[in-house]
Image (tube, rainbow, N blue to C red):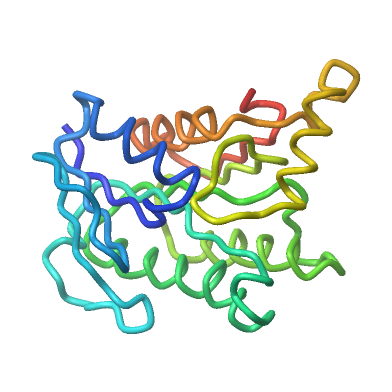
Amino acid sequence: MKQLMLVGATGLVGSHVLRQALADPAVERVVAPTRQPLAPHPKLLNPVVDFERLPEDADWWRVDAVICTLGTTIRAAGSQAAFYKVDHDHPLEVAYLARRHGARAFALNSALGADARSRVFYSRTKGEVERDLQAVGYPSLTLVRPGLIDGLRPQSRPLERLAVLVSRGVQPLLPRRYRVVPAERIAHHLLQAALAAAPGVHVLPSEALI
């Protein structure tokens, strides 16, 4: 039985991870720190936190594995600096604190094209958080890199939704790498990676998630 931490539980992929983890008999407890309270569940511990001031010595950091699905858009964040904080700084701080308290596996929902040397800010940010997570020292680290994600988001992303709809229409013609990936499939792979905790660094490209 595993103690699992999930950050990003209110987002599209995170909500699917939460649902699957709570239903999985291999998971004893899910610790899901959020800004707003979640619906209660017997297996859920839901600390309400400010990610700008995380409590460093809280007992709930003691978990076996962490799944991180934190993410935003530059438009929603308001600036590149604010975006970087959500997509890089917060995941990294969570990773350090959980590792310091004994977590041995970390699974990150990253993105297709993640590259710390990219000229594209979004891709560079994703690549930098992948790179910096490898320095934290997790015995097991899984980096999941989906392309377009299919599912109903809590917040509206009209351009992304349009891209998903167009991609659905030409799905059979697209290389697997560029096909739309259902959010529940990404969640499944993140959860299985966290539970398996296979030693080493593992990268799951978009085509492996479908």
